[in-house]
Image (cartoon, rainbow, N blue to C red; front, side, top):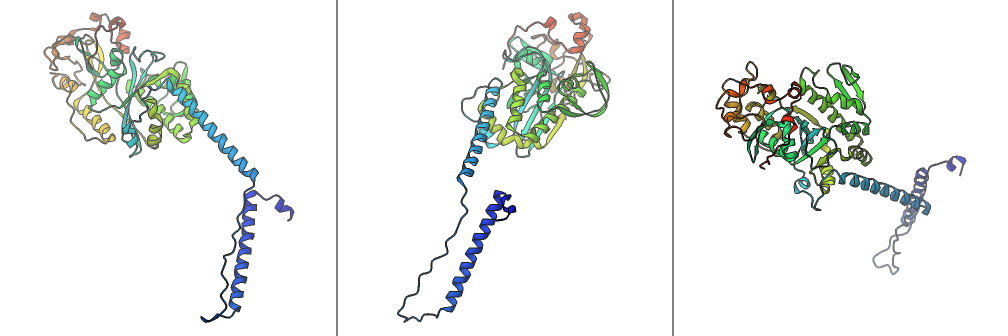
Length: 444
């Protein structure tokens, strides 16, 4: 063997030995065929029996014991590493997901479309049943594994909704449903508003967005216009943001010509980029970084037993993420700005969501559509005075007669000052007078 053979790889050595053995086998076969051709053919009455034919012995390359030991060691290390990462994921997820009963959802096992309502809030650590404060952002996610599509539909937080309580009907902004009855009440209101089923919810402290963005190495956004916010200048165009600046980028509202809708689009940009970056990585280690970043800033009713199935059957949908917006109409109720859901917009968004969930479209008729149709003068453009039905006042449970029909116009003449609301409360959409806690219970 020459010096070059001393430096050949194990794979080259294996191939060289196989070729050598195959060459020897072919030579033996050829020699045996030549010998058989030279021998005279036996007649049927020949007294001498023919020799029995034995196939040539096949020679195989035998892997050295040290190589087997090395391979098994690598397999064990990978397995232990994967188990360790899974153990860390399970530990981190325990505080975020609900405890399961050991059974996997049949819907997830079959890979049917699911919906998740995400609510962003700034109330701090979410460890008290997810109540308190209002929701600053509301996003409805739908995941369809067959179409391999995720949709994000932003719903305006200032949409007027009717909440049924033990003290009677209460008319509030959608973001106040969280203060009244927690995430379940918000889910109930969105289901009623759009006529769509919602499988799960997730409450997210917006402060964790900073950590999540950092865990994936930052995000890239395309800013439609330049602005300054909280000491940082955001230039127009494509730019890379770290977690701190991504959080600022998602919070700016009043300098945006589209107000809350502009903020919703920026939030969707960030979430979409996080999904794309996680999709490219797709590793357990990256998932672990995100979970560790989230900490106690996320609470969801997804059972922890379903997480593996949810990821396994649905992660392919990350290949195609679409964004939609629910567009409300401007309105003023008792001197406070609201957004009103028109029947046309309700049914447009409902159709989009139901299609993504593989459901047939339906015409939505609810409290919101009935209130809209009973308005004598409101059009959302030239006349923005919206009258609550039955003589009710907003954020006053039990006021009015519980009807969805307008009975008078007295509410249009009331001002915010008559109810003790400051201009800042009007601007921020604060709903409960003096931040009082409602004394009534919610009818589920």
